[in-house]
Image 1: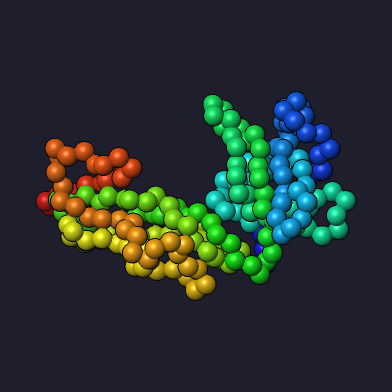
Image 2 (image 1 turned 90 degrees about the vertical axis):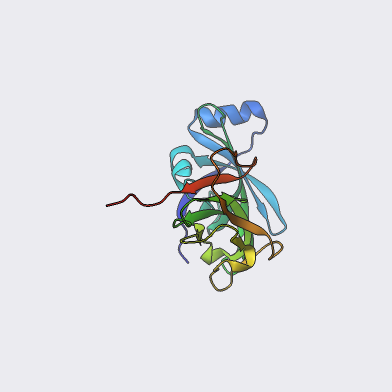
Length: 201
């Protein structure tokens, strides 16, 4: 199974804020690798290569740890970034096996246009799914083409690949279609997009 990216890692033997700052000044990213009952391994990852690898959500990473003959597979479970510059500060890596399933957060992508004079309210921008490590989708599409006001799309309506399951109540409402009303403001936490009628030719 091909990983999304391969990174070489050195083992860190210094800890604390001062050590982390020195690591970052060397254009490396402090990280910790854990999981499967193993003792956590504190690592330093190449800064630029790690930044590129983590552009893909839920990227499967092949980590070549110095001194080890076999690469480890991992997923980034927590990514800390500088709030101003966006630079990587620290990465938590979860070790995984090629044949296991994992629970990950996946973005929802709305496609299509609902019926004229309606708005599409997105109740959740992402969902949790359980999927094989080798088959984690980049996103899950929800098609609202032609849906009329009052229509809802629930978790049970999702078209998921074989082996992929929704983590949660299948009755969860993910998207709802409402009558457009220019005087109303969408509720907090819900994104709304108005579907307009096509221009006359």
